[in-house]
Amino acid sequence: AAAAGETELAVDVKDSTGKPLNGVKVLVTADMAVHSMGAMQGEATDQGNGRYATKIPFGMAGDWKITIEVRQGDTVLATQDFIIPVQ
Image (cartoon, rainbow, N blue to C red; front, side, top):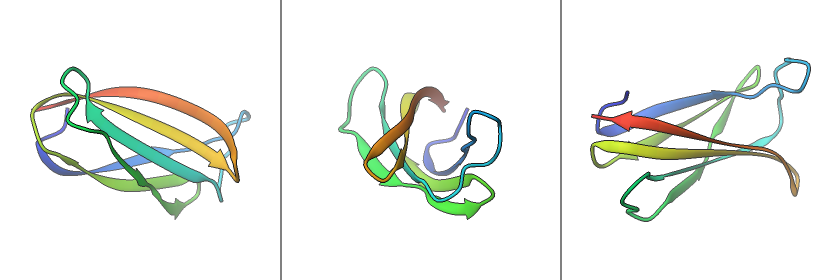
C-alpha cells in the first residue's frame, strides 16, 4: 500500500533470462482503478542495472491501476498492469 501524495515507484526490468535490461524506455501510466480521474503518464528514469524509477502523485485514496510499458525503439517488449492500494 502507498500513501496519498507523491510516491516513488521503482521497476526492475529483466530479460527472459533474468538479466537486468538496460537502455530501454519505461513508460508508466497511473489512473484510479474504479473512478478514472484521467490517466497520468510519464517516463521512468534509468537508475542503472535494469532499475527505472519515477514519482507518481497519488491524489486520492483507493485502488490505482499502474501500467508499465517497456519499449526498445518503437517495439513494445512488455506491458504489465498492477493494482496499488493507496490509503
